[in-house]
Image 1 (cartoon, rainbow, N blue to C red):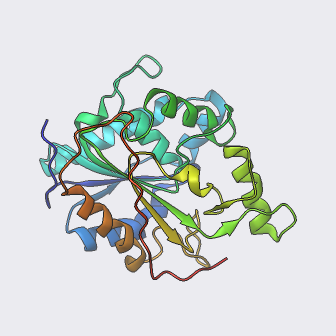
Image 2: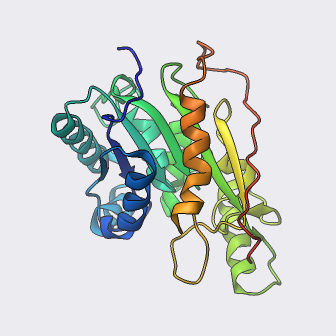
Image 3: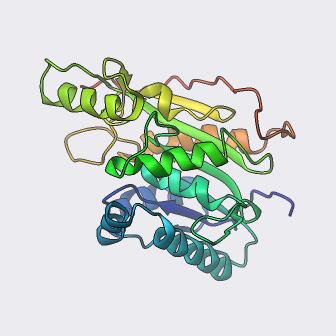
Length: 267
């Protein structure tokens, strides 16, 4: 299938671990205003995510994502969708793109997705485990390393706001523990949950935005805080989408691109 980017291409938001779809309504509105495209939210809720801890599997979430992609395409008459995935939603999306069986089912989402934009997604992990979906992160990277599919444009966005410190104030202590869980090292920069280097997917357009935190909260900047914040990564992604493709996927050379932003640094 030929990859296309048009005003009719729907955008589908994939939420992060433990979230409800309503959390992403502001982001949906910002994207709709900026893009002029129809925007949908995958109906995965907090209870669905809780099952991951119980069964150590994304199978039921993949089924929901598959149905949401089909519905978005049917509703708009489009042959492809653009996925905007937050946190663990990006891991889910990478597995969905694949052509290898996951719990006895193949989704081959790469045929229906023109671009995957990840926001604060842990792209790899140093250990397996149920906590934080570590096993799923490892599975995605082992089966589909880097920007695996040449026909899909990959964009990875990560905030640089908190340096992990085991003796610092609560945000820095929490960041230290989270970074250490994912990468084995807590004393580094990241978005408060995902360490910076682990949020950047090799081969993707890489966007580092100072000041952005991982989760949406009223008192802090995050990836979908405002239309101006969303515009930083969305406009860079759409410009990247229409550049001539390299024609390579697996093991492609990493695209080192950093977008400077006007977003102020906030701890």
